[in-house]
Length: 236
Image 1 (cartoon, helix red, strand yellow):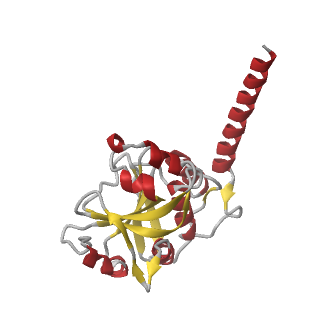
Image 2: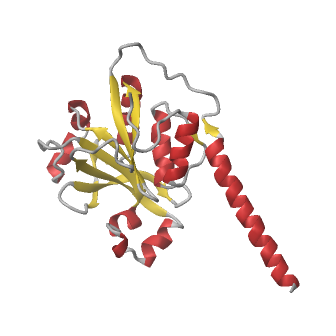
Image 3: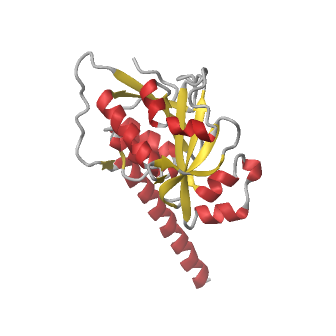
């Protein structure tokens, strides 16, 4: 009986600690001091999309000429980056084993899950997409000025592990419009794809929560600290 009480108290303590960590990760901003994001009046703005599912986030950059130019060498790998219907370049960072081997939940295997919760090498996933509705419930619209956009673009490019200045192909993609590339960093579920996404957005001048391991935590922190409209909302 005494042992059961100790186990119960330990479980309560662990649950309370997890709740406090999540709350602090959302409520404590990073960086701590507010950022000045006011651009020049009439300056060019660039729209970026944050794409979310229950466990993962991607960043969609517009397939504008300057963006396509930064990734143009991927065309030689078979990525249709200059296809007439290309509207968005969707980028995501994640654990190599889980990301590459799990195109759908039906493909889920024990080993990639184990690696995700321990330590795994990382990859960048690059997807060429057509039109994406900003009103879609999985989409958060981000409005950046040119300086912020360039900083975000630089961050995403720097996340690739390059070889002699080029992108190193890690694995084939899920279909004809995507590929995987080697990336910098090690993956763990507690410091995974959504933490990378938050770092990318901070590079662009957006304030996020200190620790956002799930998409919903990142979205709440953006609404709280960066005044970012919620999913499906358009920017005026």
